[in-house]
Image (cartoon, rainbow, N blue to C red; front, side, top):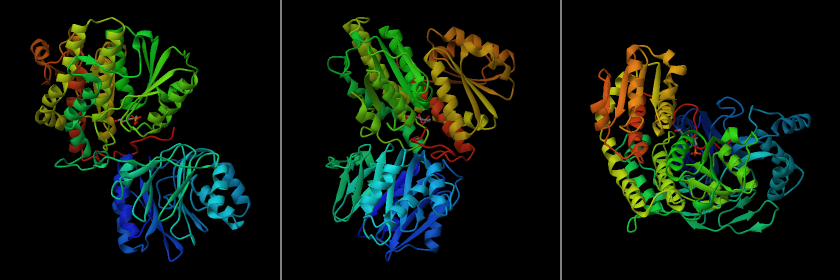
Length: 605
Ligand code: F6R
């Protein structure tokens, strides 16, 4: 989603704004812009498309200033044109915005009736006009900003410049996150710690409802009721702001390769290697009646895999639901259940809303997040972080396997707490989990052969992924990864559903990718493979050494992943499908890290 940066600085600001916007690119955007005070006058540069377009505009028309604001826009209201790109200027005010002003239509009508002329189709422009109108009544900047905020409804993060108010930035948070960075005689506002990374590691995270006025040497923060407050200044570790691709072409490629380490760090946080116990703090699973997982996209699929494992090992009922559906129906919630929000970013609007819905019903809440300063993390009763480091590629990879790692540890802990396994079995399962990163690394070594398959798959118009048990969830993930970065239409199905519809898609031109380790579902998956091949289907069979031995003859390609215990096979089988999607996208020349129309953190519903 949109990215925001604001700098009250002492050095030339344009380059710094661009540097920071580059670090926000990962969130997804389709236009960008900056504005600054040049001799007391607001000037801006904007461009549709990528940041290089904005850099070209700046090269032709430099902006010489030390204080400014910048924005990457992911279009919601109005196409990604220059006129709709932020910052929006009205009179003395320039504003950048992330989120949606829900009452913008009525505000716009009111402002137009008062003679104000709008240049864009965005919801954001009303903020610039409202604030300019308030300033024109003689209010001081902070008062005018507060009056403006009172008129807005919806979820928003804002950052504002006012002409004639040199070296002042105003900002507000109502929903999407915003952080304040503290420098030496300089202050920064940014969507996240990554955006502030080049300038400072001293950061305060604004609470919902906060607004702030930042000058060279201080930031005054006010809460929703207007009381001045102190927000803790945290030191952001260097590892949290590192954004290097190393020798990899894309962040996604690097992040796929990061997985053994990311999972290892995550697993280490949830097992005690000495005692062989799973250590999930904050919840006693023995008394739980149910678990309700809410999530979106890939995080939802990680939850589905968790459901298989927790129900099977711990005999504890688990519901997993897409957050955007959950929040708008009337689910029958009971206080005896645990709500788990699964979210890499911890900011996904639908997941947050569904999570709040559970909390309001009196359920205990837990968050499995990568961003530990995120809204979901801060609102949860218990936080179970994944420890895979920042994920920059829009397509989630290492966060997914880290989430699944936590789910496995939860399944083991719950099985123990509910007396479904004895100490020896717990130790065995923990050992299996600890071994998983090595197997993931071996699976990543299949990259050479997967690259070859990708050349063929890249020619397809449609691809079908099939699997049973946890592999049916992974089939969804395989299809999601492929479609989002290569734009090839792909469907994931539980293989048992094949005969209930998808088999009609089978022809020589549609590759069918079957995920089938040699487990209790193998025979049935192998039968599905035969059914597909009998109809001319071209099968890519992703299995393990025993599965390769027992596979029916005739698969176009067999990919042999390392043998693994069913507890961790979803972790091990993830790498082949991620690599496949990645290499297909590379063959097709797609923008792997920033696929069209997608945003990394979906902070609007
Ligand atoms: C797909 C992907 C998305 C996210 C989804 C939820 O590769 O990355 O489907 O999984 O937008 O995001 P988080 O986990 O941040 O809530």
